[in-house]
Image 1: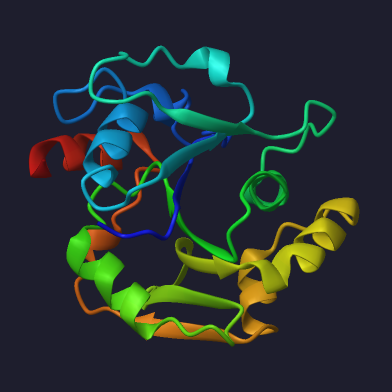
Image 2: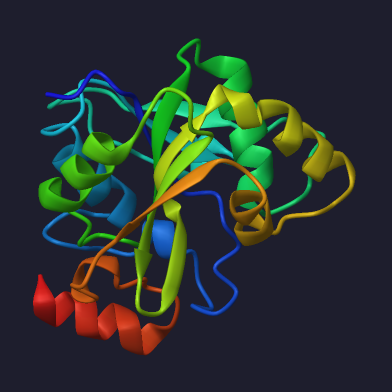
Length: 195
């Protein structure tokens, strides 16, 4: 099991899905968030859920309770930036693994490749495919905390720009299926077939 904390980002607006994708049923679980939490608990010792409001989740208490990191109530932005600021304020570790709730096929192979490629003097270590970088799949270091605070204050939420202008290690992956994001209803239907 990895000591590196893992944070599942489940606080998005899901505007393209037309309903909260973090609450969609998946893989035999009531919600996609539960599916992600329990599968990632087999890889990481500590798994957290970043969200706007934890009251929307109704997790079963068997198999281990979920730990939530809520964005500050005063922040009305539905962007990962707010989550990153809250995470760095909550966790005491130097780095953590970030994964979007809507990426249910990123597995041990991809996670281990990112962990192996990471180094202490990097700001981040991020997955990259032929379609481009995957900002919500990778390791973020505390060296980026001040940049995230500045971005939030300036209402700037471009993670791609932040990563390209920082000391980021990009790890190339050929398997596109592992990085299937459930942004639209047709992608959710496709993912249900794959699971």
